[in-house]
Amino acid sequence: MKNYINFIREESGAIKKSMILMTSIAGIANGLAISTAIHTAEKIKPGELHFREFLMFCSLMLLFWYCKRFSMNESTKMVEKIISSLRMRILGKLKTTNLVNFESIDKGVFYSSLSEDASTISASTNLAVNAMSSAVMLIFIICYIAILSIKGLIISLGIIALMVLMYLRNEKKIAELFKKSTVAENTFMDNLGGLLLGFKDLKLNRRKYKEFNKCELEDVITESADHRVDAGLRMNITILLAQTFLLLAIGGMLFILPQFDSDNVYIIPKLIALLIFASAPISDFAVAIPAMARAEAAINNIRYLEELIDEGQSRSEKIADEQAIRDLKWDTISLNDVSFQFPHKFNGRPFKIGPVNLEFKKGEITFIVGGNGSGKSTFLKVLTSLYSPESGTICIDDTEIDAFNKASYRNLFSTIFSDYTLFRRLLGIDMPEDSLLNELLKKMELAEKTTIEAGAITNRDLSSGQKKRLALIVSILEDKPVMVFDECAADQDPVFRKFFYDNLLPELKAKGKTIIAVTHDDKYFYAADSIFKMEYGKFIPFNEDLS
Image 1 (cartoon, rainbow, N blue to C red):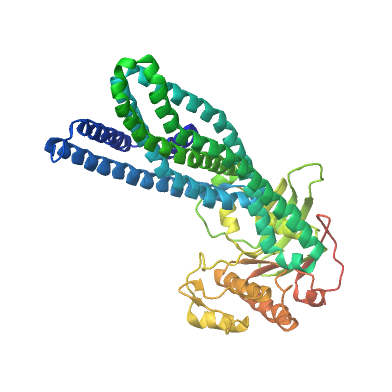
Image 2 (image 1 turned 90 degrees about the horizontal axis):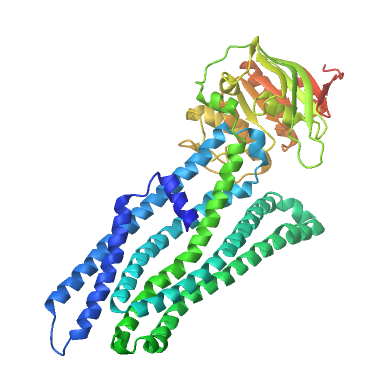
């Protein structure tokens, strides 16, 4: 509970005093209503109406209703505002996160933290408020018991102390089990993504599917379930403790109190009535405790995600994000002794590219070729300043790219990487004229497959080749000076592939676009003004006749 309260306080700035006040009043009103009922029950006679007590009871009931509703409504608004701002803050930090660090974070952590864990915290709020109101009511009942019988109070507090000790003994272990379960759930979400993305590859190979299913799904699901079962079994003990309290307390009043206070046995029925009423707030605790345990595990998971993102925060990216986008005038993009290396992890040798010394001229078509794993895709990320060079400089004409012009430099590029994303809407693009859109759809042989209405793509359920053609349309509509294509023609049929190299690229060049394309299509090397070849992260001379 402490971790949850600290989280709410930190994220909300301060818990509203009005909400705390209303929660307390609701608990007091509930307690007073109970005492009024017990007091009235002592003197009630057949056919007699105690009008004053009736009015007091109704007034207290209405006060309880109003205050409890107010506190629950306010807590719901507060926690939903916290969840919204938390999501926006975490996602907002991605703008200034180093791409290398971002790529190292398991995507399952994003999905579980910002969806499931956020929902868990949200769902637990009213239970927490209910428990706090019940705590006030319980304190009121304990005070009432103290007024009636100090010895009865001692017995009640002794039983409560025993329950609390047993609860605290359980709580730490429950938190540890939920933390382990959360880690397993993050792994499961990541592995589930692997299943969905790699389904066709797994379906082709039965042995691979079986091993993936066993090691990456079944084992992880079983591990998470085992931790949850262990936590659930321990929480069942907590729930039983709360539910057994009533029987233990009644037993104490019936069989222990008369041995120490024989003169006041007449108050035992009243004490038992109070204990019966006390069972309701204790049951509220029994319901709230498991919810709080899950909420605290969810809070830890969200904080872990934010810590991972914070580790990737870059001063250079923060400066770049603060700069206005300016139109850059240029004739060449040059890389001078540029090197990049992935961070060292585990015992493997980190991949490195460079030193690279290249020049790209405005309005030319450049092909980058090389075997798989030679570093072509990594180079494109360095070229576009998504990866920051470890050494060397990138320049446009004589101007070096730094934190202050990086955003404007990136704005020169429209990219289709090998792992591109086709968004549902046209983002950062003014809605094109219908004539241009229809012309592009017809060129890309998509006029009968999909269209774009009100800035949204109407159908993305397309083949991989068709999706890339749709991505080409989006890239053309972005109208950037430099267009970067990573194996754009790889999934196309021979007819469209020929159109891509013989018609589309020359058309774009004629419009002044600079094309930088990774390709394996040696049949169409003649379409390039220059070709650079990569091997093991380095550029080597390419000697093939381009004529």
